[in-house]
Image 1 (cartoon, helix red, strand yellow):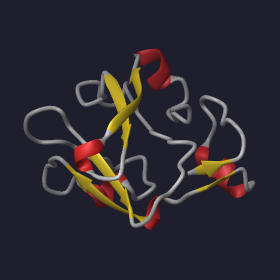
Image 2 (tube, rainbow, N blue to C red; image 1 turned 90 degrees about the horizontal axis):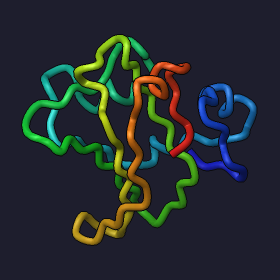
Image 3 (cartoon, rainbow, N blue to C red; image 1 turned 90 degrees about the vertical axis):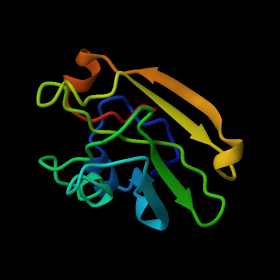
Length: 127
């Protein structure tokens, strides 16, 4: 999602999109995962249904890779985490890395995910 202003923590990304505050650009990217269980992959991660989700399978780190075809500025990243529903799969930290390819990624954010933040209202528009 892109935005001209800082998006407030806990903001509803769908509401922000409806008001024109942000624009969803994930459909312009190629998404891949480091691993997933059958039926819990990219399609479930991206389907806008809070009842479906990505479930990793394999050793850590568990990665979501988002590649744009051309240089793209992303100002806001929204992640939905529901700690109460599935605390064993809620991440304890999220690292956001950017670069021109997988070999030159630079970490720009490393945020711990606390139970309080994950259950406040479910959205995480503050990365």
